[in-house]
Structure formats: structure tokens, C-alpha cells
Image (cartoon, rainbow, N blue to C red; front, side, top):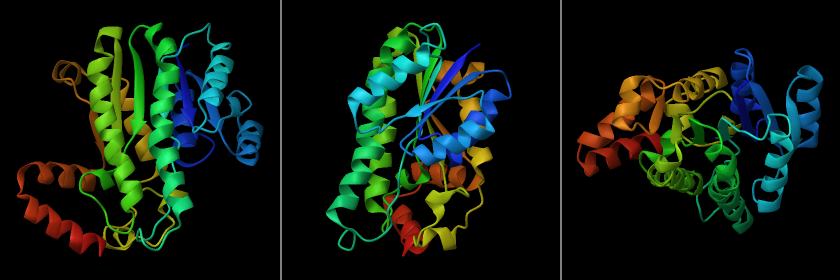
Length: 256
């Protein structure tokens, strides 16, 4: 059976992704920092492989992947870099610890996960690295500036690795949702009110599934990013063609 390892997978989009892949017979690994959430997942889904992972720690990445691949014959078809946090607030109003935590988990954690997973993905023909980005990286978002910046990192990191790892037969993609109905959207960012929270975790999970089952056009064009939902698709496409001043105005209206 093909296998997927999901960081931060014990709730929200990660758990929805686990269920989506499991229904098609995949071996699913859910690794998370929360013991309580992992226990709840294991109770409901004893077939899932679970374990502890703090994505900021390279040794924990090495241990978690080594543990998971003992169940897969040493191979890994998909690493889903899903773990992330969001702490809303203007930069001058949130703590230095909040700034550091978002950068460490949402950016550093993604890079460490990719680095640790590379040997396993390289050993598995047609493997995928999936990084969860965000529509907040289309244009920098006030009120969630640090989170938004980490997602710019994810977008750029994905594009770079797609080229770096092409010779290793590893396809690297990013998933771009707007607000989804998860704990991450439970914040005071104005864009949750102006744009609404229209997506579900299942919507994002389905896009993850689509991204690792690419059609011929996606492969031929080297597609690296997958927008989730109509709103993200419109905003993303508009940003490519309208002047920067227009993008700035739109994002000012949406987020302030």
C-alpha cells in the first residue's frame, strides 16, 4: 500500500487528509505534538500509525520518520508538511515568543521535514512532498503578518525544491487554501469576516489528494501550486495580472 506521513495530523486539515487517504487504502501516519489529540485519534482510528513530533526538532523528525517507515518497508510515498500555527495580531502587539513560534513551526519545521524525508522519498519512485501554504501568501496580510510571511517562505521553498529534487523523481507541490473551518480560523483577523470562512478541512484534504494524483497537464507544465476554492483561485489569478497598487488596495479593504 502507498503511504503518507502527516505532520500536525491529529486535528483539522491534517486529520481530514488522513481520512481521505485512508479511504483509498493508504497507510497513514499521523505525528503530532499533542499527546491528547494523538490519543483521541488512535481511539477512533486504531489503523492509523501515530507518534509524537515537534517539527522544530530535527532529531524528532528523524525518529518519527524512522518509526513510520518500519511499517512501510522503508519507503514513503508522500510527506505532508501540514503542521502550523497562527497567532493573529499586529506585529507590535504580539509577543516575541509568538513571532518566534510561528517562524519556527510554519517555516523552519517545513524545511526540516523536507530535509529529513528526502532519503525516504528518493527511495520511492514517484514520491511527493506536499507543503501546506496559504492564500495569505498571495499578498502580505496585515494582522497576521508573521503567519503570512511564513507562507511566502513555503511557496518559495516549494518552487526551489521542485527544481532541486526533479532529478530524484520527487514531485514537490504546495496547497493554497483561504480560511477553512478549523481551529486556525478561530481568530480576530478581519479577513475572516470580510471573506468568510467558506472552506472545510475536507475541501483542503481533497486538494491534497488531487495534488498527488496529477493529470498529464500538471506534470507537463511542472505545476507546483494548487489553490483551494473559488476565492483563492480568483485572488491568485488576479494578483498575477493587475498592477501592484490594485492588489494593495484589495488587500487593504479585505484585511483592515
